[in-house]
Image (tube, rainbow, N blue to C red; front, side):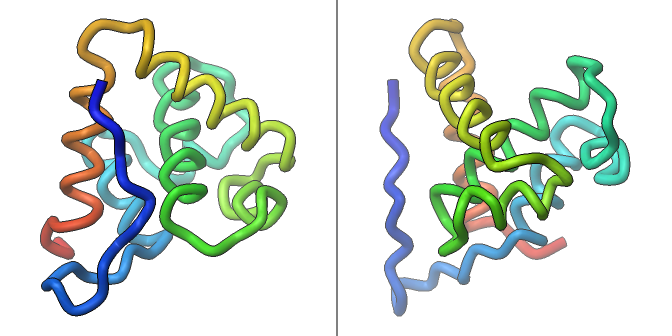
Length: 113
């Protein structure tokens, strides 16, 4: 499993990671609208992207769990569970860590389109 560095080094050509960037990359990859992700839906096609947004927000944004929860219309405990679930998937589901690594690369170094 690839470890994702929680550090983004300034001055190395890496743009600052924002919630908007995380949201765009995840929504684009899973072909869902953010309004579906922040809805109360428990459909798997929305839950995994929502959990990934929470996971990347915790890594890259200087926000509390409650603040991240507000961004995705969830409680802080749901955000904490999302992070645990994604970490578990990274360890147990074949190929999932590759997807997370690809998304991470797009979030950190990708274009803003």
